Image (cartoon, rainbow, N blue to C red; front, side):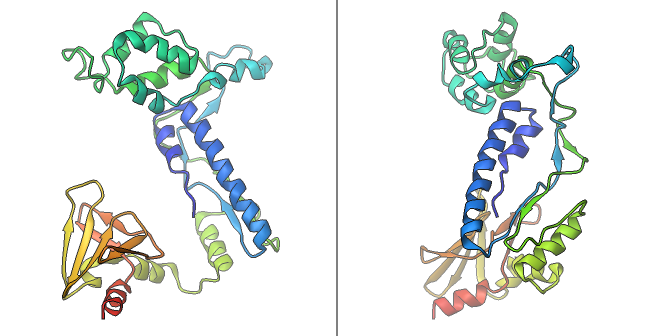
Length: 287
């Protein structure tokens, strides 16, 4: 599975440039998947989001005579942007105030106003800021998004999720496609059929995402959650198994192995969720 996850973040932030660039990048990924599927002859491709986000629109209230707007009216400015707001922020945070205007001009072709410059200077994550003014100010990315969006005619209805019908596209080598309106559970059933799965989803979930304290019951294990990516460590004699969170690999004595499934860690209950066969697999590998 390939997820264009960053598009969710940028949509929450109403970053139009981020949305566009993420869609273009995802389109390339879909193209690669389609090329493989057509050559392979036994691969289906399903493209869909899990929810809508932000209510992103082309056109907004201040676009007069929208029915006469040209492609140039709608896209001329945004086509000049060379960085997302986040990408531009990374550059600006390393610069002195007297460099800010020129850098923004270089990457966006925007001549910012004095008011916009002051807002950027007051960003709470900008080290050159006046510390007396930044405690309640947004990060620089938020101000850059506002500056860049203001020069376009893109609109957003919210910074949260939206409840509209979502996009669905599919390719199947034998033409077995989901047609018309489909609920999420119907798509799940379709994927089960395409993948040849027979076990019910709850049973598969219990097998693939079992709690670590059940998987390694009676064994010596510990969790190091001192970083953003906790690590589960299991010891058996002279052998050590390390399972990093949010990855599909595990290490036995520093040798990497593919688990075939992403390990999940939930901080609220300090629990790893991983395949239920890992303990037996670790024992077998270290005999």
